[in-house]
Length: 306
Picture (cartoon, rainbow, N blue to C red):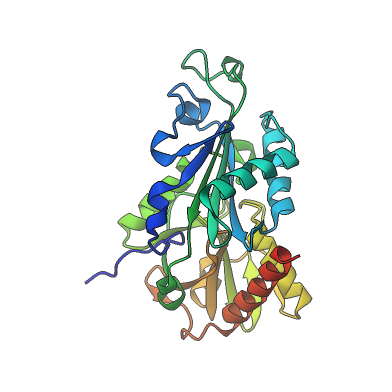
C-alpha cells in the first residue's frame, strides 16, 4: 500500500481561509470577488514575479531580504513595480489588517506586467501598468511533515542554465518545476529532486535541498537554484554556530549515503527528507536538522520581535 502523498506546502486546515480578503491593485475584496483579466500578462504568458513571505508577531520575517530579491528580479526583466518598498509594505499591512491576521500567516505577493491590448507576447502590448495581487492565508505547516518527512524521486527535468531561464527568477513561469513535480508524482514520490545541467544534485521542484554527512551540512553551489532567503539563513546560521557547511557540487552517490537531508523554504522552514528514490536517508534521528530548526526558530523570533 502506498503512503499518502505530502508536499512541503501541506498546511493544517483552517476554516477562516474560506473568507479571506485579497488585495488586487489597491482594492481589498473577498476571495470570491478577486479577479484579473484573461488578457493579463501573468495569466497569458507567466510574465511576472512573486514572493512568498511569513507573518509572525505582526511582522514580516526577513522583509528586507525578500524585497531585495523581488525588486532585483523585477529590474532584471524591466518590470515596473509601480511603488517602492514602503508602498509594498503598506499594501501588505492593509491586507493583513483587513483579514485580522497577526501570526502564522503565509503570503503570496504577485506582480505581473499587466493587461495586454492584444493576446500576444511582446511586452509593449502591456500598457495599463502592472497588476499587483496579495493573497494571505492562515497557514501552519502540517505537523506530520516533521515526523514522516518528504519522499523525493530524482527526475529527468533539470534546473537549466542561466541563459535559458535563470533559476534565480521567482517567476510566474513555473512550468519547469511543475513538470518535475509531475514526474516525481508519477514515480510515487512527494516531490522531485532536480539535478543541474552537469548532473550534480541541485534542488527540488519547490525548495532548496541540503544533506548532512558526518556532521557537515552540504548544499549545491547555488549556480542553478533559487537564491532562497531561508537557504541563506541556514548557511549563515551554520557558520555562526560552528556547524561545518559547504556550498559544493555533489552527486546522488553522496545524497543516497547522507545521514540526514532536509529542504528549506519560507513556508516550511526546514522539512526533513525521509527517502530519495526509495532509499531511506539516515536512521531518522535527524539531530543536525533539529538543531538547525531550533536556531532558525530563534532567528525568526528575534527578527519579528524587534
